[in-house]
Image (tube, rainbow, N blue to C red; front, side):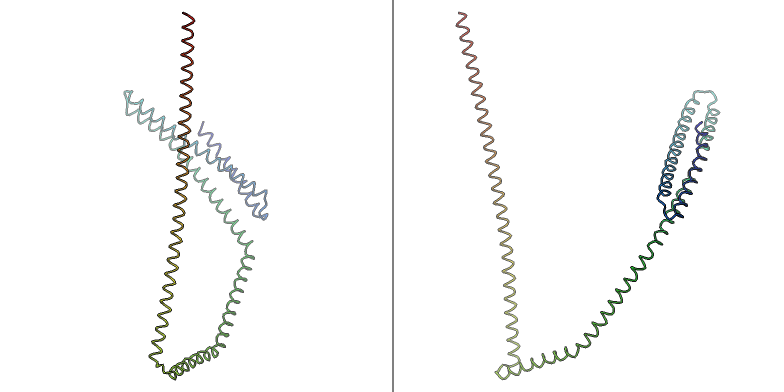
Length: 286
């Protein structure tokens, strides 16, 4: 009965594929009609559900076939012709197994065809999207090309400007060298030799370096002291929090001790009252 049901379901599956494919073709030819796309998605989901149901049925039949063979194999060992019984049970198991295998191959083929159809649909949609976005990409490429050309023109203008400014830079360099020569002449007139001028420059550079090192050291010490102040402040706040927690714990313990003392006093009063009542009752009985 189960094999017959599966055999009947295969034509239905084949019929369900055709409307899905037809709807996909109609959707693409109509320029992505929303209703056709919705119908195609619904048919695809229904087909996937049918594939899953058929696969579960085949898996269940395989388990039942293996179970029946196991039971038959166990029962054969209680018969006289054990080997004949085992061969018969094995043949029956293999017959059913071959039927299941045939239906499994058919199901696998349908699933491969469905996956191929989905890939074709996705490829068609991708091609349509690429065609639709082609003008935008062309415009973007044109803008990029224009930006590149503008950048190249600006680079050429910068090069031309630097070339035009080259004589001025050369004149400035010559003026600087002339100023340096004049400075050397002035120092020579004041009795400062070139070696002395170089020594003075080295001494000046050394002073500048010493000043920079002292400045860096002062900044480093300032940062270190600031860090120490932050750590001291954090330590102080931590100690304050611990002290506050200690006071709270002490107050809580004192409160608990007071409550216990009050409970003990109340208990003593109650016991004393009970003792007095007992004594009073004894006096009355006497």
